[in-house]
Image (cartoon, rainbow, N blue to C red; front, side, top):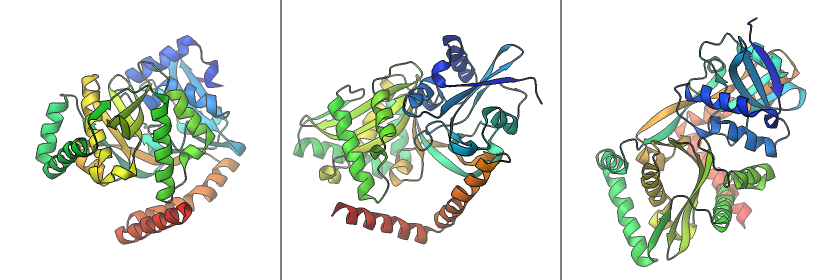
Length: 361
């Protein structure tokens, strides 16, 4: 056992000093300043999720760490905002004397599930079952430098996308891009597009879940240095044709919910939007766009590098651990089996899209 003292609170019970200590520890971690790891995101989730908790760690009388999580029935725990949070883990003082089992025991959980665990999270990485790439765009040297990179690594993509952008302006109407749009109607339009996209592709509609739609609407109005909602919109003839909602810190824009008007798909408005987002982010002093986990052709064209994230669960003996294994591991193993076989994965994707088309009839 270590000399670390741990108390568990609801996020809203953190005092101003503890929130500031969280920010300071995170800033010293050396990890990218992902807004999902800031206290503001946890506080926002707590407004929508009654099971949100934070373990506050103190060592030698000083703040030594913060571990946000959600506590469910029978000791089952999950990363805060599980299912929508794109960066997960604990915020700890380097070298803290602690093990995952000890922390989970103090939190009263026998399982802690994650699907976007940071690579730097040494406390939990040994329990990862899968590792994925999270693709990033480096704009630290400005947008012009990034575009020059694209001219070398994705010349056909850049040429085609810029040509479509010009054609869209000629055929639909003058293009206008707003990096930080505050019009709530634009956010509602994005959510409607995204819901339709989920249904069209046979996936569950995230925005049909009240806590997710409420979280996005709340974060859209949040303005803090470490975690602010950013709605970016591409207009043609003063009508929105593509939009994206994400979170930003001073240096990172975490891409979250992009979508576009299917009527204009031939112009690739989503790709045009991402180029303009990179340009707008660079002008705003942001150095990196995190496109998130999951392979996609557009990410391969846009990316300049990648980070690693992990999926899995830390377990300690208990009912929650057994329930986690029974409920999650067979499905995870089946997903891994399909993902490793491209033809089977393509068949699964086509099946999802057929289901989506049937839903739409």
